Amino acid sequence: MLTPKACLCSKKEYSVEPISGKKFIELFQPSSLDMPSDIENTLKNIIDILKKDSPDLGIPINISYRKIKSIRSYHNVVGPMMSTQSRYTAFDYAVSQHLIPLLNGYGSQFGKRLENLEKELPDDMEKSRKYLNKLINYGNQNMFNYGISL
Image 1 (spheres, rainbow, N blue to C red):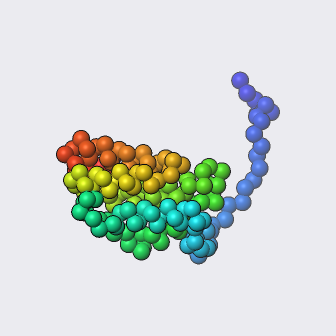
Image 2: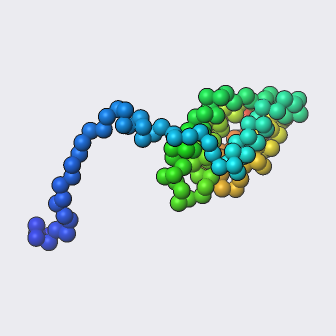
Image 3: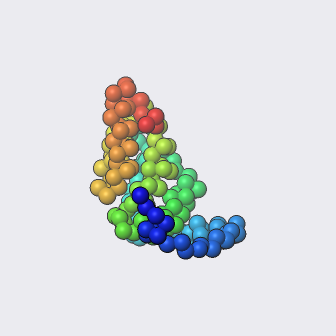
């Protein structure tokens, strides 16, 4: 049984002050929308694969400027916090949260589009690759009907 004298925890006092709304927004506001060139090229290639207008790849998917801006913002705000992991970690989370849910289509041709996308993703983008692989596998088992229900 521990007595109060045996307690190893310190009783430091912490000053808790509210953060203003303006300061809170500043903390999560990206200072820039620029990304490193390798990540920028990966984003460009992903967008090109998704929007390519070809009957061999099924229906194209257009990514809005707002969605691209959200991905860039996410990467630039969260990226420094995840720098101990892969340099693609923040971008991986952004793609898995902002782009993968947009991937809805049908037909084996659309499946080819998704397979092309999977080949484009770097190995470090484990989360996006995992969700995309599930999407492809479930779609192949569901008469080539691809959509997020993961």
